[in-house]
Length: 209
Length: 209
Image (cartoon, rainbow over the protein chains, first blue to last red):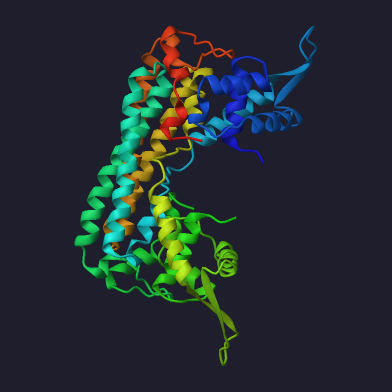
C-alpha cells in the first residue's frame, strides 16, 4: 500500500542523488530519519519496486567487479512531479494531533478517584521525562531540522505535562454531572447544556478519525 | 488484532452498564468518542466477540417480544482486572507525538526556497485554521473531558503554528551546511559537529518508531 510519507522520503532521497535500496537504508539510519518517519528497510525495498513499476523511479543494474550486482535507482521526471504533489498533499492535511493516553482520559469517569489520579500522575511523569531527555540531547544536535523537530516535541511534551496537571485539578473539583460522558444511548443529553455538544458537526473539526 | 485503546473503550463502556454492541456504537456516537479514539462499529462487534472468547466479557442472548434477539454484554471480573491493566499500560507509555507534516520538513533541503516557503505557509495556515475551529466550538462544550481534550489540541495547534513560523525564518537564514541532512551514506558526518547527532542513542529518546 502506498503511503505518502514513505514515498516522499524515498523520492526525496533520490532527488539528492541516485542510490541503491541498501544505501538509502544506511542513509536514513545515519541521518536518524526514523525518528521522524516510519520507514523500515523492508518498506524501502518494497516501495522502490512499486515506484519503479509506476515509472516514478528508474532502476539500473550495476555489476561490480568484486561486489555483487546491485540496482541503483534514480528519480524520473514523473517522480519529480509526484514528489511535489506528495509534499503539497502532506502540507495541506488538516491539523491533527493524537496522544496515546486519550482513551485513559475518556475512561476516568468509570474509575475511582485514587486510580484516576495515579494514572494521570503517570502520564504527567512520562511527558516530563520525555521533555528532560530532549533537553539533555538538544545541545548536541547540529542539524537545524533535527533540532527544530526536537524542540517542537519538547514544547508539546511540556504542554501535555501542564495540561494533565490542570485537568486533574479541574476534573476532581468538578461536580459529578459535568465530569463523565453520561449522555444516554438514545442520544438524549443528560444535562441541557450537553445538547450543543452532541449535535455539533464534529466532522467539521478535522482533528479525529 | 487486539488494540489496547479499543479494548479499554469497550471494557470502560461495560463498566458503566451492560449493553449490546449496537447500543455501544450509539453511545460512542452520541458522546463523540470517535473524536478521541478510532473505534469503528465493525471493530466494536469484532472485538466484543474476541473479548467474550477470552472471558473478559459475558454475553447473554435476549429475546425481545417484538424486537429481534440481541446479545447483551457485561464485563467479567477478569475483564475488570484487564481494564485496570490496559489503563495502566496506556498511561505508562513513553511520551510521543507525531505530526503528518514531518516528512515535508525532512525533505525541505531538496526543494527550492520558494517551494519550501509555500509548503511551510500551508502547514501554518492549516494549524491556525484548526485552532480557530476549536476556539469557535469550545464555548459550546459542557463535558469537562471533551473540553479539556479540545483545549490540549488547541494549545498544540497554536504551538505548531508558532513553531513553523520560527522554523521558516531560521531555516532560510541558516548557512547551507547546517540546513539539510547531508550526512554521508557511509555514516561519516559532513560537518564535525554532526558526529554527536549521528552516534547518539536515539532509541533512548522514546519519541519515534
